[in-house]
Image 1: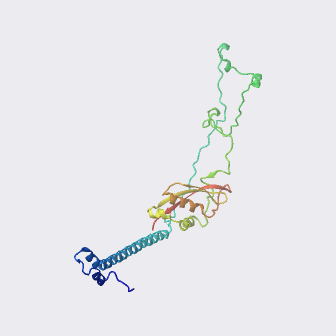
Image 2 (image 1 turned 180 degrees about the vertical axis):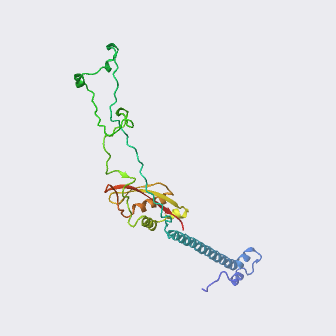
Image 3 (image 1 turned 90 degrees about the horizontal axis):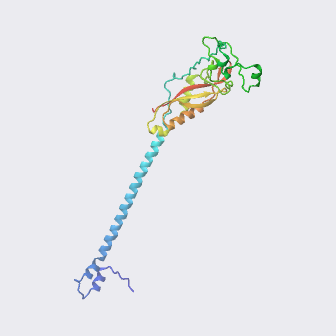
Length: 273
């Protein structure tokens, strides 16, 4: 059987031979090939347009992603903060407190002569036997070296010192020989500047300024407790604390030739270049 092309004009003419060609079926059958061709072309054009739109969209998003990565990379490579003022290390002067003075003499009250019936029982003088039988404790104070004019009576002193302060836990504000960083104060500021890392978030937000840090130099020269006397933001505060805790050992401070704990103060500067 020969191959039949149902969409050919010859087939259409043969099918409608001796028939009413004005009827709609003849026109539809005659133009079916053209309609199919147009439909295929339309579908092909639509597919091409969709592909072009998808490619353009992916290209634009890819460029935006590259720009974002480049921006973050550039921010991460910001120059490290530099310390400009090299003469602002402050040493805290101690507060001198005058010791409380105590009168060396015992207050004497002149006896008053009254009639026996006018003397209250609690004011009567106790005999030696009555004192021995009493449950009350007698306090003895050792008073030395204070004058009668500027001192205080023992009865007026409310605070009683029960023990001496522990020298091992004491932190001095000022000592005879203060702690020294290897190379001096200039080397200290340079070390902080070289090791300080500017937080990316703070740089993006334009945060900059100075944080004053107070820390303890221990008897062995290591950094102990760290306190921030001023603040910028959470990230800069953390970085300032980190870089101070990472400081190399100092030559410890000395009081009367003995190594002691000493407070030390230094600024940490964050500056965008």
